[in-house]
Each structure stands twice: as C-alpha cells, then as structure tokens.
Figure 1: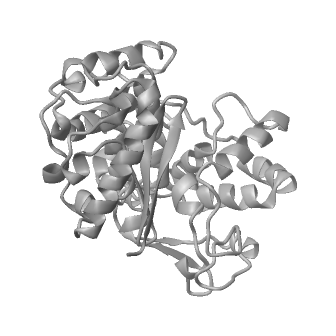
Figure 2: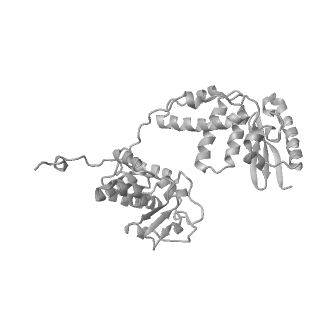
Figure 3: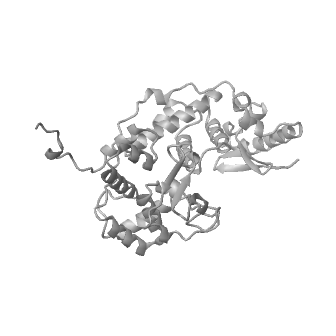
Length: 357
C-alpha cells in the first residue's frame, strides 16, 4: 500500500500521527477518524509518546482493512462526530481537514493563526471561554481585525459542532462598526509612478496596472499571466474565479502601459517569468520598503490609492456610475456608490444646481 506513517512531536508535550497517503499529507491527533476513542494527548506527558506508537499501529491496521484518510475528508461529519466536549486536538483536526479542501493559501494562513492562538490559551476543552480568552489578548486590534476574527471563529465553531462543541461565541458577540480605511488619491500620480519605476520596475508595473486598469494589486495583478492579455496586449481578460466580484472581466489596457508589457509564454506569470506567482505579500512588502524612502508619498497613500485615483479619473471623464461599476468589477451598483462616497470627488457647485428661467 502506498503510504508512510509516523509519530511526530507538534510541540514540547504534544504529538500527532503523520500519514502520507497517495502523495497527500494528513495529520491525526486521536483515534476518532478510525472509530477509536483514543486521545493520547490527554494522558500524562510521560505516557503520550508510547500511546501514540500504539495508535500508529491501529491506523496501520485500519489501512490494511481498507480504511482511507480520504474518507475522513469526504465524510467528516460521520467519521469524526462523537459526544463532546470538543478538545484542542479536535480544533487542530478541524484545521487539518480544512487544509485538504479548496481554500486559498492566505485563508489557511489566517485560519492557522486563530487556531494556534486559541489552542495555546486553552487548557484542554474548547469552549466559548477559549475564544474569549484569545480575543481578550487583542485589545489593540481595530474593529476591522475584530470582525475578521469573529468570522473565522464562527467558521471554527460550526466545524467543531461535529466534535461536541455547543457554544456560540460569534452569536453572543456582535460585530463592531469598522472605520473605513482611507486610500488617499494622488494629486501627482505621474510623478509618483516615475519615482516608483526608478525604485523597482516590478512594483511600478503593479502600480500602473492598478491605476490604468483598476485591477486589484494583491490578487488580480499579482497572478496575471501573459495568456490573460488579448489583442496585442490591448486588453486583459480575467475569469470570475480570479476576481473578487466573481464576475468575468475584460478591461482595456491603456497605451501608456503597453511598453512595459514585454510578453511571454501564455502560462507564465508576468512578474516572475515562471508558472508560479510571487507570494501573496510580495507587493505589500515592496510598497512598505518604497514608502520608507519616498519623498512623494503623503499620509494614507497606499497601493490602493492608485485604484482610487483611477476611479476618480473614470468618473470625471464619464460621469457614469454604471461605467465605474463595470471598470472596477463591482458586483452591484450599491458597492460602487459606497466606494464613490469614500473618494475625494469634487462637491456640487451652485452653477450645477437646477435653475428657473
């Protein structure tokens, strides 16, 4: 059978079963996936390693009898559910199951943060108090960070119900009004773009695409392939699976951007020249470095300031919210209206008001 299995130490006094099956890695913290009520990490520390070695033998026997870890992934509710209470091991098992599913790298990275810190502040059982203790250590968080945590905790609570969790921290703790982050538009975008080009051509290409095509830098632009460009680099086409609004987008590429587009194999990323994109924080890191040495940036200037500046230009040229909605890839006009209220659009003047002749 095509697998390798071992006992691995996760931290000083905790272990898990590591299973590589059909080139896929799995972690198991107890015997529940194979129908055994064994939780070695609950035993005295001195007995845990030996108990996990015995549990490894149980997993090997289950594998010989036809059990597969894929059955846990595909039918987790039936294979994992037992009477509570839910434990730290259950919390980690929820995370491992979600790792095998179709979530983004960034989502799983954030989820791991919440799991790790909640587990560290819990004794053994996972209760509402576990999440409250975690949130209590983050008093410096903004309301936006708190609301993000609340959403992740809600996801974990829903999954933990299959392990006997009965709490509802998310329901009992309301969301907070988030302060809208200000992305101040540029007054001299050409000067800033020229300065960025001298600093780093890759960051410059990201910024000029954000401004000229109103694409989102960290996801849509970072993952661009040469095959996304059509008609001699005059258009860029993105499927709904790659856009925030989940809608297909075809955006004109202004002529001033095209000289910076060198072209390449259709399956190659435009920044790396390979089939792989830079890491999700690549442009965020570059921007932070540029910001430290720049004399052209003001407070609240961000990467998204290029998108905001571009939106203002589109609205000033067309006066059309429908066009703005289309070019920005918003799913509905309401989003565009909300977005526009946060921009520094020129206020109405008296000569623009209705007249009586």
